[in-house]
Length: 166
Image (cartoon, rainbow, N blue to C red; front, side, top):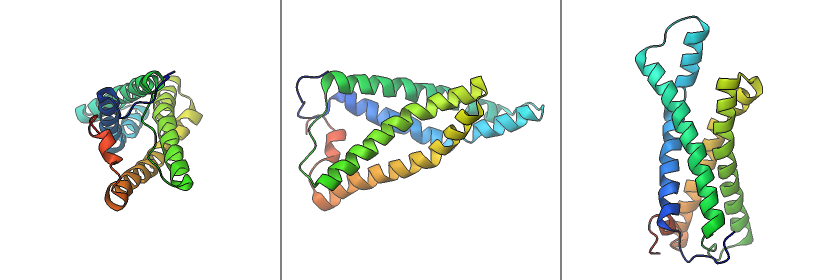
């Protein structure tokens, strides 16, 4: 565990944040290909190249999200994160809640997806399918919070995840 609290996010924190964000966006946009592949295979058909590629990409990108999230949590534990900026207790709790739930879903979605696809576990599939709307809500709250800080409060909090020089 980190014994000191850094003044800013490190370049590795920032890179992991944005790479994971891009991978999750890919998953949200192209994730339906898994359902398409499942239906084709269930009906005894052969998937077209695009469906097969996107479904396989969904699996590998999900594994990447899981691995990078674990690395990100290890980086947080080892090097710490900057202290939250002064704000109301409600805003601090909301930020901690959204971040905590984002980390949880970044772990839970790939794990349940793998259990559903490779293990055939129906409950895991149901949980995995719920992760998409849950992700969308959490991402919206996260982005709205960042924009609120950037536009309304002008406190520079959003810049902390853009550059390690802040």
